[in-house]
Image (cartoon, rainbow, N blue to C red; front, side, top):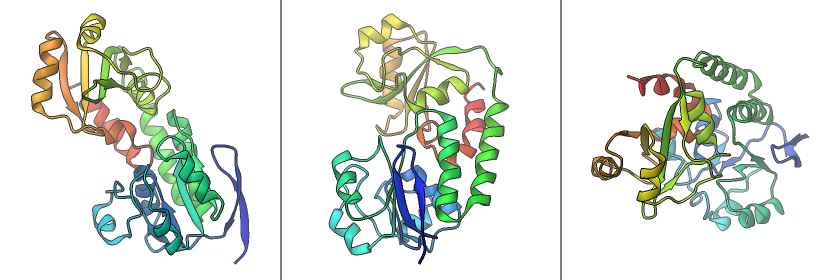
Length: 259
């Protein structure tokens, strides 16, 4: 099989058998994209968190979690391409895999980088036309969201004990702003916050994400007791943090949060 060279989003040049026939995906949102691109036959391994689409999840070999990969299982599957992500996968494990296999890595903090990733994975897997359709649809839908609402000050919770929020330089922050929600957290990444600090910054909206921490109605009441003037709600975390083909659903969901 001939090989082609590709540059991933970390600027690394890799040589891949083309088209790749044995693909392992290490990231849920990118796994869903690969299935939507029609690569079900080629995908030989996914993580235990790659739950979409559910019928494919049940039938595909699992290779551990995103940060605790089963390296031995990956070797057994003999992939000719592994697709991962800088933030979601463990650097040491990725570097170990790079010694044996072509590993293409994404690096995503803003929507344009997600759209670029979709197109690049299309080229990487021989599905350029389908990937371009998905990417263009996402871009057009988000453009229609622009300036629909005056920004409202919002806090986005991802964890409890301790409370942790999505801050700047995260994909969640970018999606929030595109939906008309101004992030009240000025710190980078995922800072911890106390109840008193939350009370002091006085967010107008508070989103409790469904993942990675599974917030429930009892937590809505808990946060409401801290910020009684804020509108507190549980939101679908996949609509804010999954940067693959699921982004096709995000603009409609973001609109629904204003109702």
